[in-house]
Image (cartoon, rainbow, N blue to C red; front, side, top):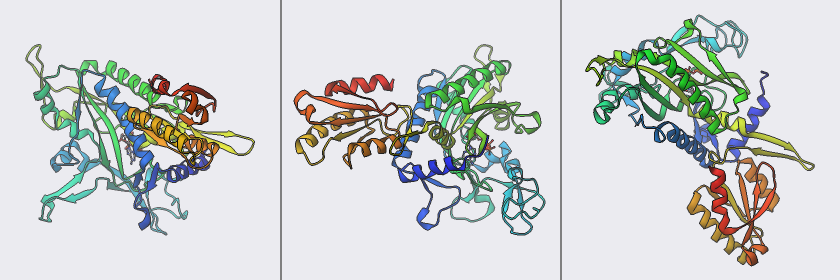
Length: 431
Ligand code: ATP
């Protein structure tokens, strides 16, 4: 796929201008690899997280939620292999001294920035270190977790003791992860602080192939739920020699990002590597035998989800006067479900009625925006740009017959509804 830097610039600019995502620490010149989510970005993220939790935890009977601490005992990362092997190959340019990830250079061995040869690659550990307590010695060194997975493995026994689940069952967690990426890039795609949504699904070994296929289908279904364009998603069977040390099979879901086809999600069969290294086991109630369950791990990056959702939703429509930009977000994902406007903001009777309808919708849906700025056409464009599915306008007819205009983002078509029909109309479409 051709690189489309123009599309990427449009998305980044829209995200900043409209309050989705800002450069982290911007007024101090920014901190590379960090981004701050604004009002609409938080809403979008929360909606995605809510849908994920609903699908994978609340709608199931075999899934247990975890929210583990970000700081964990360093022994966890020693055992998991992260201290010794969670590295990327780092090269430094012999001339300009810029640093790169060796496997991400445009041309192997050549500096992306000045074209001079790079030096030999060395292993660079991506975990951030910090100190706990008042003593500054190596015994106090801990790591910010580079994945949420281990927080679930170390709680395996707790979950079993609290809930006595029968195999197969899973644990699910949404939370921050930190990686000192050598070259953070591509907006929120490769960052140093990000959020993951992960599942560790514990199974019997002989079930692994069946379960792998099942979770692959679940992940595909999930992408539909949040509106990720499936025609841009490709499954990559990771080659044996590229598998992580714990994995016997991994499928990456790659997405056609404007900067290339890159990993969106991963699905791994981790065998029973993790429970083994933490010396954890499970007593099979059927025959009282001790076993070490195997694990299927569907792993979803939240920030990459946000980016894929925005890219899938971005639309431009040529109009006579200009270009209409609209985000065709699913209503369940859209940061604002509907906007409410009085036709004119200097007519108290219109404003009063609009306030009443706004209050009613706000109480019902929460994500409702008041918008009385500029003329109606401008308001529609602003709402289109942030993906608001419906705009509701209160005009003089409303005062006599209680009908309002409800305008559809994707088609631009308008219908009139009684004010008391609004909640039902929107609810039907949300479900
Ligand atoms: P990559 O090869 O792109 O570095 P990875 O294979 O190291 O990714 P995993 O360790 O499988 O990634 O992490 C699981 C998921 O977490 C990824 O599929 C991705 O969605 C997300 N993720 C990983 N690293 C980052 C990052 N630096 N920024 C944003 N999301 C990330």
